[in-house]
Amino acid sequence: MSGVTLLAVLVLLIAVSGGMVRILIGPTAADRMLAIQLLTTCGVAILLLLAQALERSILVHVALVFALLAVLAVMTFILRTWQGRR
Image (tube, rainbow, N blue to C red; front, side, top):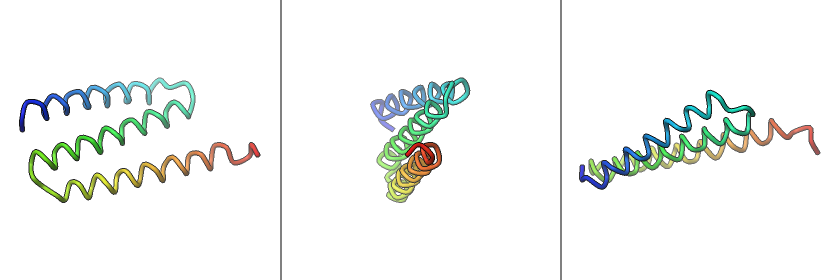
């Protein structure tokens, strides 16, 4: 791995740790959901960086699946949270 890639992964891991703190102390469910979105976004970015560094194209496909699952999680959260507010 190059130095720039390693630095990018370290910055993303710091963002993940901040997101974990927000999940634990987030006062509302929306705060926790946004933190989970941060974790999935950082996870996808880390997988894409690893795919490039390790030259493994399968990691790109895994990252795409994670991104799609994150969208489904947000849609489910929105439908379940604001279901009775119409």
